Amino acid sequence: MTAAPTATVKTAAPASNEPVLLRQDEGRVAVLTLNRPQAMNALSGELIAALDAEFERLMNDKTVRVVVIQANGGAFSAGHDLREIRSSTEYAFHFDLVTKCSAMMMKIRKLPQPVIAKVHAVATAAGCQLVAACDLAVAASDAKFATPGVHIGLFCGTPSVPLGRNIGSKRALDMLFTGEPVSAETALRDGLVSRVVPPAELDAATMALAQHIATKSPLVLAQGKELFHKHMEMDLEQAYAYASAFMAGGMMREDAKIGIDAFVNKKAQPEWTGR
Image (tube, rainbow, N blue to C red; front, top):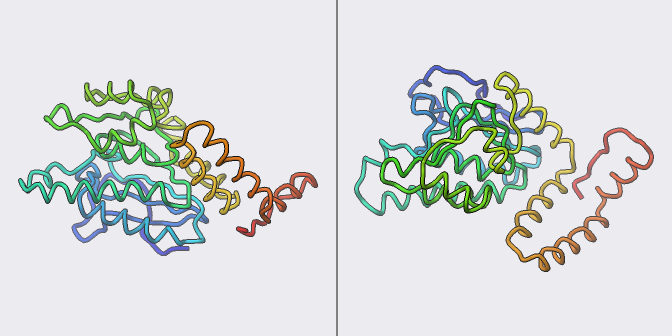
């Protein structure tokens, strides 16, 4: 188990020397907590770098099968830090900031583990992008989602990338052009989140989902995630050809043989080998 500060949601602002990102492992689930509650967990350069570094560590962490991203305080994330944006008028500064943020978001897709966003309160702009970049998202029923850049003369360009891929062009452009928030139920209907639960049940429901997925073969989770994201970028014929080869190969793997044997013989939880 990784030794790290607790990931309990709190409302007090962290001390100046407290890390902007916390990690606590619960069994085979790594819980990452955005810890800038005093700034609505805005994605500062420091927080982006911390997330990127943690994702890099998780790439080769064989003990972790699922990752949960949550946040302390009164918001999931309000997006980029506007104070930081205002601190420079140099194009190079802003290009570096958004490029690093995009690279961090891309690492979520490249991680072998499924990544679940646990969303409370609000997720706006790059915070909404972070939700869209995750494989799954569980939202409190009172959560709101928005890409409000148009209100301040700034189109949410990078958030539009995963948002459009999650909910389609018409719904994404509606959010992007109006900047208006959508409810958790609308986000569920559109495909931005995968589950909506009462606020009081958010912690338990998210962890139950993560722990359930963590009982599955790590090889199947990693390869299945890669398969899904790849075939979604292919035309239908290519996707079927790719998925057919994938499934035939999967049937030859040791974990498939173990799982099928356990199912047929009504055995307890299979002991996966990762092969």
